[in-house]
Length: 210
Image (cartoon, rainbow, N blue to C red):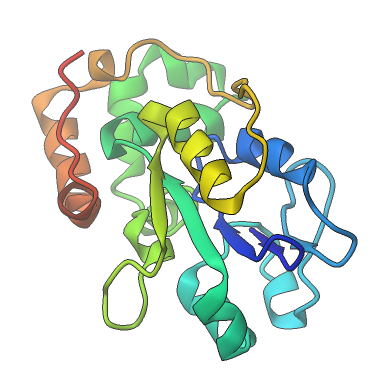
């Protein structure tokens, strides 16, 4: 998460949606009084002890909202990115099991097995994207939702709205794997569909054709 008082925006970092790339681009514009929380590449925490203790940077709307003055929440430009849940789930699993050489050899079955474990399903990298971006009433609370599939276009639009110069983005910290669709059988496809039903509906995604 980034809260920029200089440019009056709040960036919600949804896991596995090129958050590291977006952070790097935004940091060039941050002021000395701006806030950031991320724990993967060095530790930076928001000046809010309750949130700093969370130990990751994927802060949700419901977590940050009570700590911000109404004037900040109502007037700052709030944005984040989402990704096709089927693609994102494969990327997440290959990231989480990157040090497990056996995972890639039986990725489909390993992903199905992982989904049977409650602790796995509750991990912040696995939980539905909608949970991070909605308020108590279940509605998306952002002013703009970009899409990983059109990352550069979405980032250009954000910069335009913030009146910031844009830059050409490069992908960083990407998981290494083949085409996501190649890892799915009917059973895994249904399991992922059930887990991310709200993401698929609210963000208008379907099973990728390629």
